[in-house]
Image 1 (cartoon, one colour):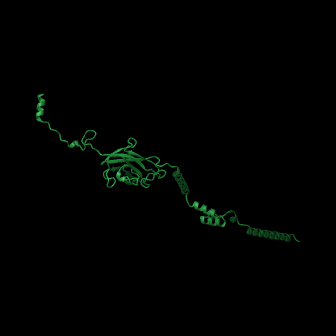
Image 2: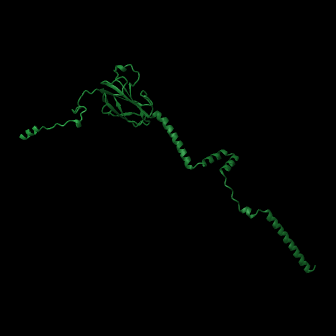
Image 3: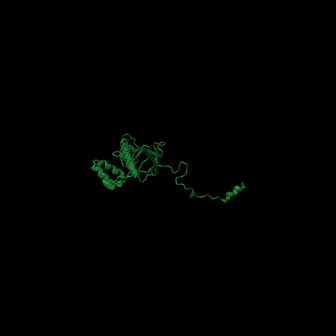
Length: 268
């Protein structure tokens, strides 16, 4: 075979091999994933609460997912406030339950008149008597309404057959913040009866919601307070200082000096 034909044959063989290799290379490129698909991943969309709930329900943990979503619907501060409120309610209920059993009752202290200095005060018939009181530190549940009533002496004939505690009402259902009251002995007495000079009268101050006969209204509430007193009729025309009752110094007449008195003084 001449050299020229042999060279042309080899060139044809090499060209065919090159074309065959290029064909397999292109075929391999078509079957492998492209660089854009393998190296650059598109961002996944964020799951909404609804999709997370659906996914959780499908996977069999729907209850847990629901609880998580409900908590996330409220701010942390709101959840903390709700927790503190529930704790305080529980504490208050437990305190009240134990307090009813172990708490001490409240008490009334008479300040006007001074019950410590004058255990049995005397009130004048026909006068206005000022009553003032306060509550002890154990009175954690002060009364919403305060009532005052009185009782005649045991030997008072008109009330010997009585069955109740009080013979007349001084005040009824005063507001709880009241700490004093003026008793008019002329108009506030038993209807149809008058006061007489005697000892053994009794005055009661009590919680109007529980009554004067309830000796155990409960822990922190006042028990009925009672004090005895006497009443008297004033038979004096003058006061203890010797001044006539009703004396008005502004209305007193001024004695005029006689001219003859001045002459006598000059002659002396």
